[in-house]
Image 1 (tube, rainbow, N blue to C red):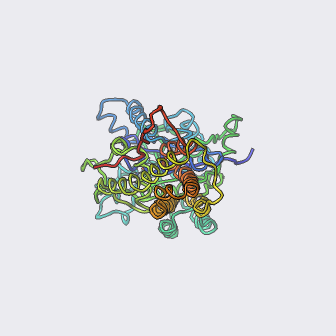
Image 2 (image 1 turned 30 degrees about the horizontal axis):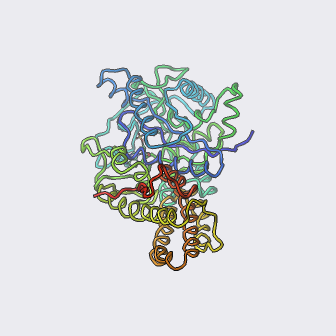
Image 3 (image 1 turned 60 degrees about the horizontal axis):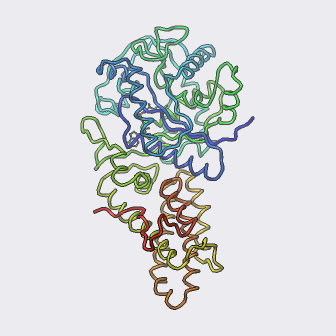
Length: 496
Ligand code: MSP
């Protein structure tokens, strides 16, 4: 067995907060790539899940007077439900409290103690409990945690360390020899410079945190939540320390190395430095790509508990339709860059791009075809100039989705939509039909074939709309009753 499946992952989301639009963003991105590949007949394994250990989860459970696992179950359910509601088709949902994951993490930790990559020492440092991360003085913002802008604690404790420093040169070589590994390029240079400035060994166990995986040979320590969580990318894919389950062995061989880890920019260092170093220590090949996307703000502000400005994706989906949300997030901002979410820009894009451009194009073509083509299955006409012009875009859109350049793919699709609308405006098939019915039919068939292309192109972004379009485009004249003046339902009803 060898690798034959495209393997893509999202971060594992913490269960200390309900899912919001930021979480949905990464998961939708992975869904878009997965759907696109599956539609082409490729094998895909898309893994997402929840990160459930650590002091933050312990604290919030305590606050709510429930056991941490009970709390995790509740929020994990919210994530699973959200992915279902957003039409996300993941293949596997992993929880860091899964028995198999916990067992493998324990065994991996022991193995690395044996090889000397993990050793016992004393840690004294500045710790942000919210990040569950130690910081150097130089990394702080005005003395506070650079992420949470909250005071850091001075902590001294016995700790296991991972020999990150040992992998400094190998990491730099890997970055140099594999230019696509860190992506986008702009974010890669920050990582390379950080590694070149020198890596220190990192603390990978806690004695103060009880809600975590105990170290097998020294159970007063629990394994650092990041060390635990990063390993999900291999444990979920079937990796086992003792290679005794042939099914899992087969699974891992078909999936690894992962093709893409999608992460937000704030956790890039964990994924681009620590994760590859752990894999090097375990002698496992590195993933092919680690992609860091930007952050969404809301009306120019960071989403936060104190501001209470989290956007629940379902609020948008309920009002505007799920596909409109899926479209907006990837059209509005190039994947990789930061973006700002506002209701005004959402509504504007909805009315302009969806209700007006795509929705109108679709209803004009279908209504005219119903009138002039009768019930015939619209075969490709002899003269299909528009189709010939647009169909080469398929290869370009494929390339852009594969490269995670979703905005470029959508721009090209909407250029085609505009071109078709303009053609209809200039050709005026409703007038043409009065003088040259054959030419009108041929023109309409050509536009139907173009809409078939568009329905295929938008599938990974807007699966429901694509299905709806395909139904009408495939069988031409769809009627659900016998009345003559049946109206086609609007794909995107205009919003006031
Ligand atoms: N549990 C860690 C990840 C461990 S992976 C082995 C974690 N979890 S998280 O719940 O905080 O989720 C972080 C991820 O959510 C980000 O990397 C990003 O993918 C997504 N987002 C959270 N807020 C976001 C925005 N405001 N904008 C865009 N995406 C953001 O970190």
